[in-house]
Image (cartoon, rainbow, N blue to C red):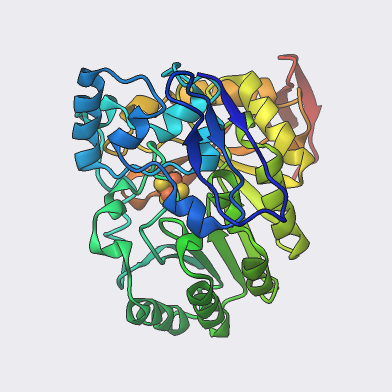
Amino acid sequence: MENKKNVGSVDEEPGGSIEESGSDNAVLVITSCQNWHTAYKNSLRSVEDLSRYLSLSEEDKTNLRQVAKTYHMRITPHYFSLIKDYADTKDPIRMQCVPSPEEIRQEEHERIDPLSEEKTSPVPCLVHRYPDRVLLLVTGKCFMYCRHCTRKRLWHTKLAEPTLKDIDLALTYVQDNPQIREVIISGGDPLTLPTERLDYILSSVVRRTNVEVVRIGTRSPVVMPERIDDNLCKVLEKYHNLWVNVQFNHPREVNPDSIAACGKLQRCGIPISNQSVLLRGVNDDPQVMIELCRKLQAIRVRPYYMYQCDPVVGAWHFRTSVWRGIEILEKMRGHTGGLCIPTYVVDGIDGKGKIPISPNYLVSMSPDGVTLRNYKNETFFYYSPKG
Ligand code: SF4
């Protein structure tokens, strides 16, 4: 099925929805979503919603209902409109948002909490893994539930809704540990919180005198660009030490709506970095990754990390080999500018931390220097001063 996007003017009534233009010749029309609450309400939440747009057999529906019992499903109108061919189960956008029976397949090495965030959580909703920074998990809710998510466990637990008391307690921990200089506000997607609550959390974080930098991890510009509205920007622009990390995984996600959302954040003075996840069938191809990173650089979103997909329960089918990641970087380095090249990282299981991995350009070392290899696979000796 072909999809058509109809972006209205700002004078239109706020709101957005997914509509079919007639049952015989169903053309998907995504109307403009000036209001994120309406867009949220109009998201696809069930197998029945999906079956209005996708051709699903009874067996498909039964399988998907089984998956939906284990893992939430929510797809925003904007993200769903990015699917090119609704009949193509391998569409890279569809793969990231539409549940798959693969999610309930059991694999030997997969884990519910692969990074052991729960073991490194000294107080509720806070993860302290590195000396100078902490992760503050302010919600388990997301605008869209990405099928490859590392924190699928949070979708159903009570951490999905930490109270302000939990958050205050976590920030007391931050204050009591003066070596902490950076707080990463994550979840879930923190921008699903009401703007006033987010403002309260941000002001509580920056009040801690040891906090020099605040980061927000969000996928909103990609999946719910409507969320980056004037009210939110008015709040965010008050905080001068704020960074935003986003997650673009495929070049098609860089489109006029997401570009506009990033532009609004940038006009608030916020630097944006991208953390892609390397996903089988979505972006595990050097040309796709190069195109994605070039598009991001062109809109001043820094390609920061390319994550190896974690061994999380329910996402095994997205995992590629580490060799594949190295091969992708090998084909990027030298062939495109350094600002387009993310750092490839494996997040070590059990809280071992992020390990940067790269093709090997240092062939050997001797007292006089090093033998190096360049992007053309030429090796040469490079004299190095001693000491
Ligand atoms: S937005 Fe982030 S936290 Fe939410 S489902 Fe997607 S990957 Fe997981």
